Every structure is written in structure tokens, then in C-alpha cells.
Length: 146
Image (cartoon, rainbow, N blue to C red; front, side, top):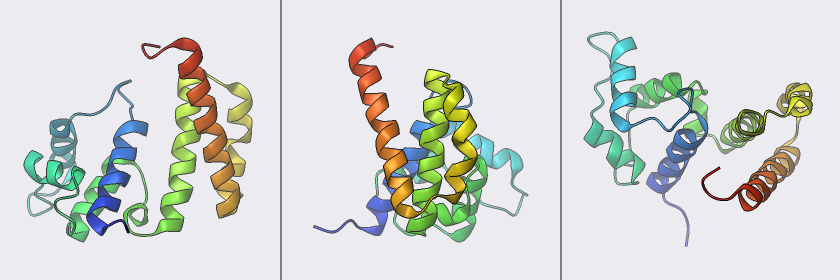
């Protein structure tokens, strides 16, 4: 069964909520909406918690380009993340690396962070797999509350 556009967008939004946590925790929907409203011009994007929830659940597959830009700006990712698989793959690999560094304070990983931008799609898949494997092992070792 193929993934619908709404499901793909929902999965990419979920990934951002899981990996972009400058407050040390997951953003609430209200925080995202308020953050977007704080930077948008009066005639700019109008995003409600209800609409964002529908996007997160894959029930609103066709957001405007303005909405995608506002979400991309809020989370600090390129707007192409939402529509281009190659951009999404690169961005997800970079976010996974940053999450691993944040969670594990791995200085050696930080020294190699610059190489992520030059990796091929296969290389990014390998990096993402290694980071996810390390995170899984860390959770198994430290328990779910760590």
C-alpha cells in the first residue's frame, strides 16, 4: 500500500516534532502556531491548532505553500523538506545527527558533522541507520525514562 501525500507530510511533521526540541522537550501544537503568528506579517499565514492537528494526522494533505514555508521557518528546515524526498532525507540525517549529539553529548560526532552535507543518499541512509541503532541501544541500556 503506497503512502499518501497526507501521510508523508504527517510523518515529516512528526519527525520535526521529535527532533527539533530547543526547549528540551517536544513543542506543543499551540507553541508552533504561536511561533508562526509571532513572525508572520498580518496578511501572512493563518494557521490554527486545529489545522496543524489535521496536518499532523494526515487529514489535510494540501497545505498552502505559505503554510509549508511558515512551518519550515519555524523548525529551521528548508521548505523542500516537505516536498522533495532527497531534501527530506538529507535534512532528516542532519537532524538525527544533531539529536544524537544533544542526547549523548558525543564530541567525536560533532567533528564529523560537516561531512553530512557531502554524503550521498546511500551515505545518509547509513548515517541515519547508525544513529537510530545507537539511540535504540541507548534506550535499551538506560531504560525508557532516560
